[in-house]
Length: 142
Image (cartoon, rainbow, N blue to C red; front, side):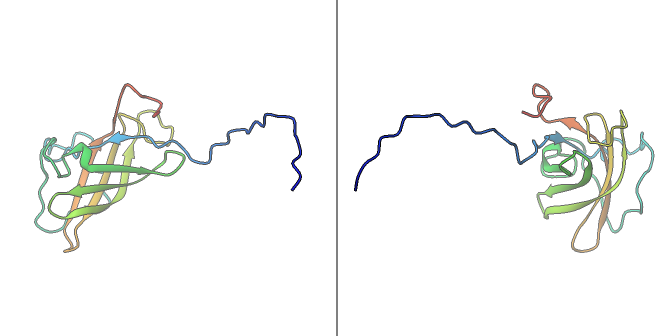
């Protein structure tokens, strides 16, 4: 096999992102801490079964901001909320309403989200919470 000498060269590849940067938000249900409904009642239907709400900060409940995940599409538009419950595992949430501070149609800190979760046995909880930035020192989610 004959070897051929080639002059060294540099190839530059342009970076093209193919994923969006996920924003990280915290959301704790405020019903257990403030049952007065300070933002009104914006759920599509009522609660079902014998349900209660934990106060904000109670681990592995709707009141635990780190136990709820805010789900958006790739444009930041709210889709739903999932809750990790210490007794029942992941509960899928449904969207009911969002009160936006700036009307930009995306989830931002300070927005108030109304959502519901349902257990396999048919119980249904209605929740509301104020969106908080997961890490305020990184406002651009990087």
